[in-house]
Amino acid sequence: MRHFQYKTLSELRRSAEALGATHVRFEDDPQKVREILTRRVQVGSRCAGNSMAIHPMEGCDGELDGRPGELTWRRYERFGRGGAKLIWFEATAVREDGRANTRQLWITKNNVGDFRRLLEKMLSVHREEFGSNDDVIVPLQLTHSGRYSVPKRIIAYHNPLIDRKTNVPSDYPVISDDELERLEDDFVAAAGLAIEAGFRAIDIKATHGYLLSELLGAKTREGRYGGSLENRTRIIRNIMGKIRAKYGRELMLCMRLGCFDGIPYGRDEATGIGVPFEYPVPYLYGWGVDPNDPLKDDLTEVKQAIAWFREWGLELLNVSLGCPYYNPHIGRPFEKPDDGNYEQPEHPLHGVDRHFRIAGELQQSFPDLPMVGTGYSWLQKYCINAAARKIDEGAIRFFGIGRGALAYPDFARAVMERGELDERRVCKTLTYCTWLMRRKDHPLGQWPTGCPPFDKEVYGPVMKEARGLLRLQATGKG
Image (tube, rainbow, N blue to C red; front, side, top):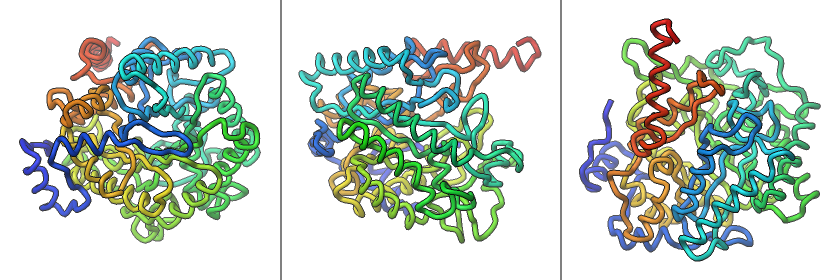
């Protein structure tokens, strides 16, 4: 279903107004866009050289032992040359059983040198292009994938809707309190390796349904890590506290935080449109959801948790929504779903508006905590006009691009030079990158992912090979 048919910014503005997407507003003047998005941003004791960020975008192209692969190096060199001053390094597992795919990055004593050389390369090419890299912030995102780990799922609690979506039996074992306590030390050890690799910022990942994120919604879990909000935030408090105790202020503590889980959706076979799973009321699960209507957000607990995270040392927050595994339209408003997934159940502008509303409310509730906004890619070349308006209003501090950076890694340079993006290069949210990410039939267990339409030299052949294998499998020859 095609939604983005706008030829001008005025047409897009009128559509947003007609749909009631009141938080989607725009700055028209390219020079003002340029001036706003090139503003420096203070983050703790550091200063980012502009207001543009690249979100942590996994390439699924590491080596089996966790080292960055050839395409990983290529991606970060392109990001380094692109001009964004906040480059959020992708999800990197703190231990092997926390990897979401066989080629996810995983930092260890044996490969820390590879991470160091990659970071040095990225910063070196940035300095070549822009004269300095002193104003670049690069948080390394540390993660445990929990329910989405391979080959074995590790779940925090039983949510019957998510269990159904992920085919987890009701008697599947839940990770124990003692195991979670040991995991805290794995995060601390990985933070030490990050320092050894040269990183001066880390992200304690708590979004997209992965383990720390799932724990935040574990209201029905028993023991030290479930039930009360104090218990559900315990692992994050302990990780942050142990890192501070061991490494002092060597690391800036950051977090990508899922602020509204929503509920799982499925595909209506008659229409192809996404429909929410039937849910009980009150809904006793999830995070940031209204228990009386889990299709809506309730930020009460989220705000309390952020206040605690701030007390525990958090200096930079990246605001995220939804879970790509069970409600991708919430986190990533799209034009076309990946093959076999559902069509948008709402106009994508409603999804963009949700992102802007929630991030704006949180940023204005914590004006001393710089935040990164999400949800811009669907706006295509006009994403920077929306971002400039949000930053100028004080509704966010950084404008972040995820999928769009795979298609257009030097978008920030275009903003700095012209205050406009090249329409021929912007992401059209056709979800080819997600399709590749979901394919597990590669000889290494995972296809690398990128942007086949706009990075054809590398990912065009990858897409062709993956589709060819799928056709062979369909005919019984693969």
